[in-house]
Image 1 (cartoon, helix red, strand yellow):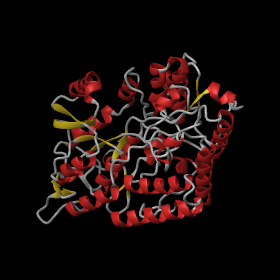
Image 2 (cartoon, helix red, strand yellow):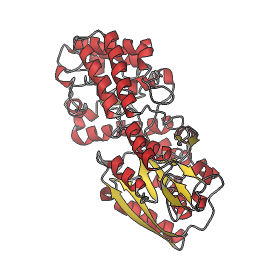
Image 3 (cartoon, one colour):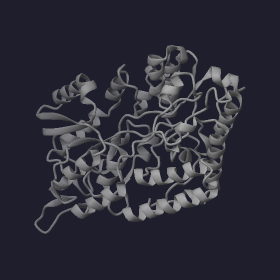
Image 4 (cartoon, rainbow, N blue to C red):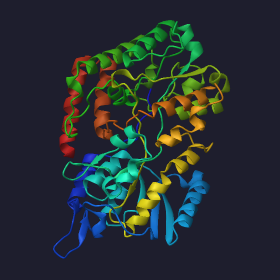
Amino acid sequence: MRARRLTGTVAGVIALALTAAGCGLSGGSDDGDATAGGCKVDQGNVGSGKLTGKAEGKITFQTTNLKKDFGDFFNGVIKAFEKAHPGTSVKWIDDPGDNTFTQRNVADAQACTLPDVINLNSETATALTKAGYLLNIGVKDPAAEKPFVPAFWNSSTMKDSSGMPAHTVLPWYTGGIVLTYNTDLLEKAGIDPAKPPTSIFGLFADYEKIAEAADGKFYATMANPVWRIPADFDQMNIKVLSDDGKTAVFGDDPRTTQWVEWMAKLYKEGAMPKDSLSSSNDPSTLYSQGKVAYGSTNPSFVRFVKQNSPSVYTKTGVGQQPFDALGHTTGAPQYIGVAATSKHAPAALAFAEFLTDAENQTAWCKDPNVVIFPTTTASLDDPFFQKVSGDDPFSEARKLVAEQLKTATADQTNLSPAVQNAIVAQVQLAMQGKKSPAQAVKDAQTKANELLKQAG
């Protein structure tokens, strides 16, 4: 199962709120002031042309729930930046990253007080870009893309108020996607752990073998489809939303109904614990107890098993999550953006690029307290990732993800919690036998479209 995405915002609703407050970027107004969103800014922050000026002045840097565990690291980065750029001062603040994260940053943007350099998720970055509150880094520094994995840079593109692509963020750290499994349980089901399936339906076929062999003594995976929607659809290259994001189209692909048919069949045959259909619990506990064959796809899960269940860790294998029709994996990176409203934009942009450069990304990803992966090419080529000395599960996961990320994209489908839950609810009804898979898919698309229309 793919680690569940963070979808704590409703991008459409936020975009509407932001649109009411501002009108994107403008080269100037009647009194000669330039504007970003609804805020007056320096002329150089907006429009065409590279950003010029000396990197100096006091800027604010906001992260998301990182200060407690990584204070020493980021204070070191700040100190090094200030030394390299005399006349600069960086104030570090840390947002808790709870479910009101976007609302707080939206309010800051509307009040023209957005932090100069800010750690963002995809949904928030999308909304702030649409309203013109983020610096168009691709225009203001055309060389900014050079350190990054091309696929990540190319897919980390937002749309401005006119619908045109704008590169307003730098891809920062990301997770990875791996297949984790209990080799003993797979072998009991006649599955070769050394030959992981290459498609989602192939994985489902293995789940079915496990159900037959286990006879209720253990399970293949968890039942709640919330962990798989829309991740499985993305990997199967099923188009979930229309190009403008305003219409659900997943039901138009016959493979979606086949996917629901498989889920219903697997649930009925006992591949999944019955009581996990509506549970939000991931497989961590049951996997650690040796009761679930497949664990989480998050690489950090491997470390969790090592720390909490050493006996199961020795039986844990790591393989490639099915690429399926997509042909590669997708990442969900965190981003670094620069406020178009910054009064010291040259310093803010310089710090954003310093923070995300290969040297600093590599240093942070080597921290033993974190399980993350970099987005720069040089970092992924570092021996830390490429010359793994051990053959233990975590070492294998680290090497596998590092190789994946060289071709990964950030093209994941972002669904609001309301839309995702509406789809999940219909799939659950099909899994319970209360609706046919075809009807469940049809109703899921209808309900999704109703919600998307409400959001604008």
